[in-house]
Image (cartoon, rainbow, N blue to C red):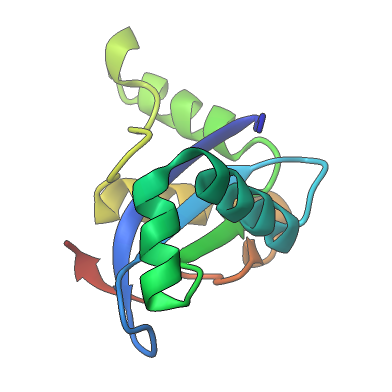
Length: 129
């Protein structure tokens, strides 16, 4: 699967029996639900532990939030304007902090004039675990 850019983290969400994998994806051609389904199917096919988890729990733990085109570029431009060195311009792929994620979501909202389009708009996490 190819995306313009992405970041993901484990989150605890009310109403889910187990933690979720929440992916924040900038993809201009697919809906969040389509990305979520494709990612879930790919993990079942390629990762035995994930397939076992799904078989035991009977639930799809993947949630995808689509970010507005230009979100990651805008984030990097902000970081560069703040004087961040080249190695720290991009957000981490895995386990971004609340601060980084809030910044990405705010950038996405600013660019779209709306909330991010996806399975969840603002993170409803009880925290990163």
